[in-house]
Picture (cartoon, rainbow, N blue to C red):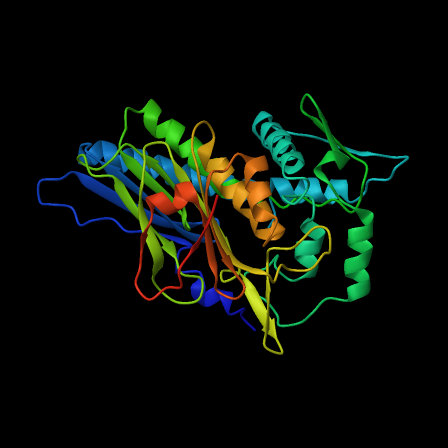
Length: 352
């Protein structure tokens, strides 16, 4: 049975609302399907040949990264996970890394600790147990005892030590799943590449994780925040140069059992999918904005009502929007000041 989230895969978590280009504008777009979602690269103001060439390269880089970091198909990460599963406290598992992957794992560990473990790429076994290491999802619940066993094993990124290019693992329950990191990291790499080629005005959209460079003939890139329960946007805003926006939602990858929704966003503390939140959208700025926008939405989502605001502070996020399970909307003051709300929505609560 396909999960109902499959229907939403074509509806981006954050929808790019690009104005139609005028006849004289140099606007080039290319699309592909990478990271299990629709990817679009839009370049403005460059000759057609150059725009096509840089967009081609960005999409090729994304495809290579997807193959390297895929959580369950054969590739680099799957090979590493197979080795880590053999770890024992008295016999650690060891494997060599490429420089790029070593840097990714070190950064992911730093962000995991910053989030107090709510962003935890080491819980791949829990994600797999719930059936989300697949393109289709069966409507069935895992054995609670097995969930408890994995939670008790406490797989954490700090179970993995990196010395130079050597990775050492001591906890066989740790299985890497970088699905909450890879798209944001890809945005940062694409932005750096485009700038190196002299492209200063572009929009990179990976399934709703979006990075803006410059603008479009003096007009900011306009994006919309997807409504978590119906087609269309909750609100729109202008994305500024160097900003990235990311969303985590319970509507992209999920299944239902007896009318209850179970999504792919799992609380590492309980081993169960989060059910108190529908969606979280954040905007990040500065260096590595893409990575931060992708990562930070997850611990805010898991923290939930009463705790997400403090987590936003820990993650350095000042612009955030949270939709609770009952449909209630809360936003930070800075985010609210940027938004143009769609009609017929409940009044959003502004969190200071």
